[in-house]
Structures are given as C-alpha cells and as structure tokens.
Amino acid sequence: MDSKILMESGTNELEVLEFKVSGNFYGINVAKIKEIIPYSPVTPVPNSHPSIEGLFMPRDIMITAIDLRNCLQRGTSEPGGLFIITNFNSLDIAFHVDEVVGIHRVSWREIIKPNATCSTADESISTGIIKIDEKLVIILDFEKILSDINPETGLKIEEVDLIEKNIDRSKKPILIAEDSLLLNKMIVESLKKAGYTQLIHTANGQEAYDVIMECKNNGTLQENIQCVITDIEMPLMDGHRLTKLIKTDDDLKDIPVVIFSSLVNDEMRRKGESLGANAQLSKPEIGNLVHLIDELLLK
Image 1 (cartoon, helix red, strand yellow):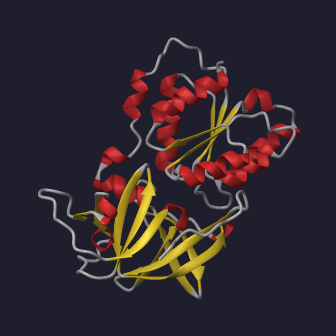
Image 2: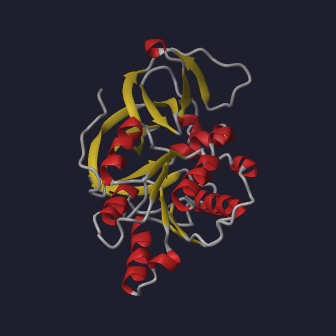
Image 3: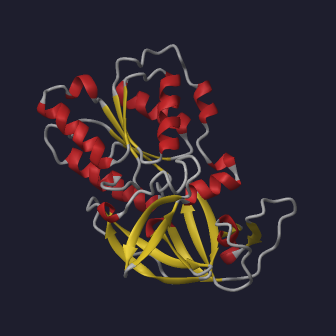
C-alpha cells in the first residue's frame, strides 16, 4: 500500500492513517509513513526490550520491528497483520499492527489534546484524539513510544555541554512552538543552558502566531521575537502553516524560522523550503539547533 498522498503545504491539514490493534482504533500522521507491507517473520534480538519483536530486511535494509500491541499493553502480537514502516528522527522503524482501516484528511483544529485525566504529559503516548465516523481515534505519539524503548532516540541534551559558552546570546529573544510539554521544557532548558535566556514558549502554532501578532500590533517584534523555532505536528495550527503565515507577511517575513521536528525527511524538507523556512533540523539534534540559531542570529 502506497501511503504517499500529495498535499499543498501550509494548509493546516494532515492525513491520518487509521489502523486497528486489539480491536481499538489508532492513527498516525501519513507524513511519517514510508510504506505499509504484509507481516513477515522477524529474527528475535537477545536481551532486547519486550516491545521489540526483532529484525527483518525488506529490500536489503535492516529494520527493527516493534510490537505495537505490547507497547499499548494489549498483550503480544501473533504472526500476521501488517508492518507500518515509518521514518522519523532519521530512523526507519516498523510497527506491527492488526489491520489498516483507511486514510482521512483532517484539519489540525479537529484534533483534541488528551486532558490530564488520561495521563500526565510526561507519560502520555497520545498526541491527540479525533472523531472519525462516530468513533474516537487516538493519534499515537510514536516518538514517545520509541524513546521509551530506547532513550537514545530522544533529545541529546548533553550535546549542549559541548557548545561554546563565551558568546553573549542573552539579547536574542526566541519564540518556541512545541505541543509536547516535555519536549518544550527540554528545548527551553537546552537553549537557556547555551545562553539564550529570552524565551517565549507556546503549545502550538496558533498560540505562537497570536503572540507574534500581538507584538506586531504593539510594535514590539524586535524586542520580543528575533527567531521562531517550531515543531511541525501540533494541534490547532501546525508548524508549516505557522511558517507560511510568517513568510507571507511583509512585516514578519524577515524573522528567521527554524523547523525542529522529527518529521524532517527529504519530502518534508522540500515542503519547508517551499514555505520559506530558514533552517530545518531533525529533533534529536539539539546541539545542532543551537549552532543553527547562532548562525541566524549572531552573524
């Protein structure tokens, strides 16, 4: 099954692949999917995490297969079903699911953030919930699932310790748009550690855009926002839409925009470039993020 569906950039829409695991309905952003293939036998890896089924080699590429049923605490998958092969955080990973239901085009405004009654922000493996055909489909946080299995795939904050500290970065205000409370906090901590202390952090593109417009209307853009760092996947307004709104406004277009997302692959990079993003970086590379911002703001 070919998962690639062409979409115009910056429309604030995404396409969600709906699939089933243990009779429950889940979703994944199609932009994360390379392909969907029938299940094939895997080679178990000794002493690996319980959610790792093993390794297999479609088209001579070694890929780790993850048992999504085990991740969701629904038991252990049997042979059969499908592998959704994904690419994010610069990694190819296969997730074992029971069946695929279909693909739906939706607006980020239709996706509801889970509230605190479901789980804490640090523990949640859901980025949102959407109602499709009178049923609730849970959009899974595959980055969180993967980092729980192997923390090395998450942000490498220790990289910030290697950055040159004898540079005054304190007078360069930065606006951050990131919906994950945990990642938002980690990005803020990393930038402060590097010396960028004037930070405004928001939970999605809409909140960030509201801050930008407030500063524009009261004439304080230069004092408050000299760079924008944005994720791509966010409720209400995604990072591509935010980038488009900034770069098509004559009063805002000179503000550097850095897309910092697990989704920065070749296709998404082209989309970001078409929207005018000044730089794009895959999410684990927090050290390189500081270097990029230095190049944009301190040259």
